[in-house]
Image (cartoon, rainbow, N blue to C red; front, side):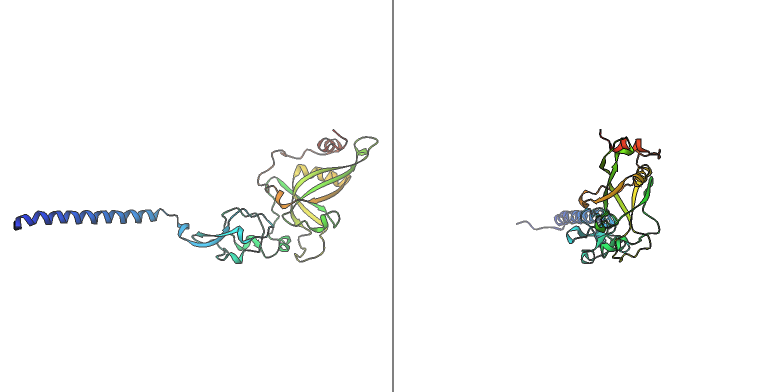
Length: 260
């Protein structure tokens, strides 16, 4: 049996120190790497959870609980919500893209509130104009069209205005006209009477055609399904660089009232 001497014990202790040092070095490296990875996590991931749109929500649509989810935001947007129950059942004032925080200024408690004046100016994109047309219960779908809805316009006209020996003809002249105001600006939102006017968004070129039709045809409107609404315009229409004037020839060429 061999007896350990001080000379043989020293190498063993040296190897033990090396092993312990290596373990501590690995632990230190792992800790540093973990801290570094935490710094790469976006601040929003660790922020407060607020209510956001789980899917695209269209204007004037009643918001369902299935349209919502909680998502972390840091900092939380002003007027945001942390409880989905406070948003479900409300109505969207504007289109809300998927993933966008829902704030108090983009929702209303009732669809009736959407016809009130929400801004000091009309929401007219560059390159477009606002025009007002008369409406009534029979002409305007019983008063159902409201702000944010889209209507299709039909014109009834006697073709004698284009050529002798005419007949009464109906044509669809405009589609997907965006309503940006119902009634006059000072009309209360709670007014139960049917408004006498609708203010629409159009290009200046289409406005010329509309005014000609107002003077020479009978106009009525149909209300489109909200599922068929096109996106609201955000850029000028390249087809209308500037108005060029409208008369019977241009109107008949565009809509073929006298046939192809």
